[in-house]
Length: 101
Image 1 (cartoon, rainbow, N blue to C red):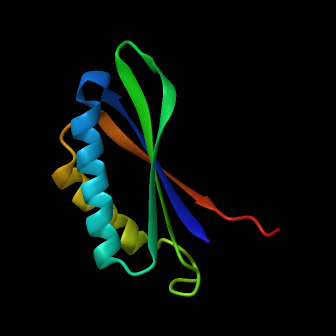
Image 2: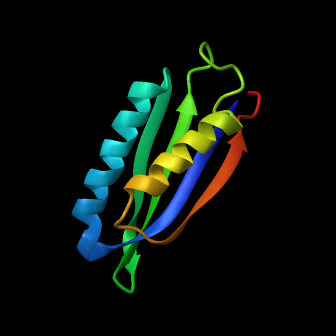
């Protein structure tokens, strides 16, 4: 199953505004993409006044057996580009596949 891991930097001074933006984005994405799970994490430390954040996206296998498809990824990235104004630099997207266990 395909999952997305998106990381980027946020100025610590903008963290509250950035968190509001990301949480709003993720709520809207969950409303339009059935079965989407979205998480927001950040590293506990900061460097030069910047925090590293990560968004994680997955989808329920019963809804999409292959996970977050490239077309859903495009929707997520387009909406993030429109709405996230408090990040520094670019968002880096990594795709991982679940291993059989």
